[in-house]
Image (tube, rainbow, N blue to C red; front, top):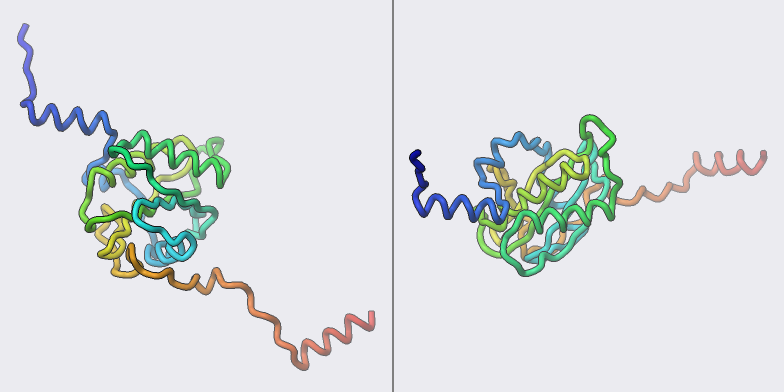
Length: 203
């Protein structure tokens, strides 16, 4: 019987990726992650809510119309990139902010992850660990796995899609909330409102 061995470098690379549970960009792109209709609005909204600094992860759950249902932010502990650890951290946050959808046959809500980090926009092993963790956490919580977005000094980027922008970035001040998230306007006091007030008082 003859046994073959993979080249040492290839074998080492495979074992490291397997041990640390990382997803390469090509694997992520092939996973059929749903595209965000308006990624800049999502990024700006999460940035305004959580003010992320480098090493901060923001996980958010969106409804089918991409409205924000829940979100949470936390600081990544200093440790080697490992998708299993990322999965556990994300799952703990999801369980804290929103009930699971495991009873549904098909997920209807989507989780996205924004990670603020040092460095440039190029993929890193740390990104690969977050991708693996997000995909697995979504499966365990009954959610669709959505976009993974990095926030660096260069701006924001949706990995695997090639979409991004310069603002916000990791050092920018939070932008105001979107109009849809602003409090309702104060009712005007005019003739019509005065008529209604008098009618109500007469009842």
